View 1 (cartoon, rainbow, N blue to C red):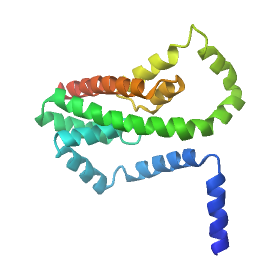
View 2 (cartoon, rainbow, N blue to C red):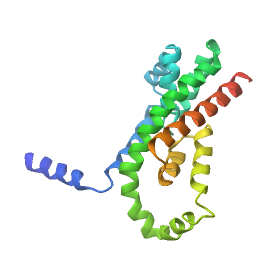
View 3 (cartoon, rainbow, N blue to C red):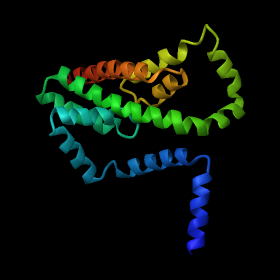
View 4 (tube, one colour):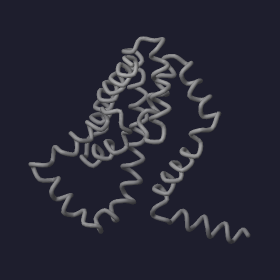
Amino acid sequence: MEEVLETASSRWKHWHYKNIAILLLSLVIFFMMIDHPLFKIAIAYIGSLGYLGAFVAGALFVSVFTVAPASVALFFISATLNPLFVALFAGTGAVVGDYLVFRFLRDRVFDELRPIFLKSGGHVLVKLLKTPHFAWVLPVVGAFVIASPFPDEVGIGMLGASKLKNWQFLSLSFVLNTIGILIVIIAARSF
């Protein structure tokens, strides 16, 4: 039995797509848990934390897995607190969330996906995007996705591929997320 576990551990350690598998597994778990009462209690608890809750909701706002509950928490928080301060705290939390996703994507998932992308004809797209006429496309589209209420992973991936320095990414993430969250809060309050 010990030998079987050791073999499985060795296979997992050397498997090239383990981070993609973890990402997909977390998606499945999220969709299974979304209607669970504990999940709803957690959202209500985050909403009761005030500006600290806004920070936590901001960190959760950046992911496809958690954007919906984070939006609900931000809506409830902004009903009792200053929407601008809620957006600033949530924007700061979003920077933390974006940076964690940025590091995970850039350091792990992109390395796993690069060979697949290049084998499926990605060379042509890479060459096109490196030309002076299209070099601005990835950062601009990535920034738009981060500022929008859509989950940030795609935008983070685009910014990561555009070779931004960490301080540039963090500054851009803060400004774009704060504006995007403020727009979501204002829109939600107007209904």
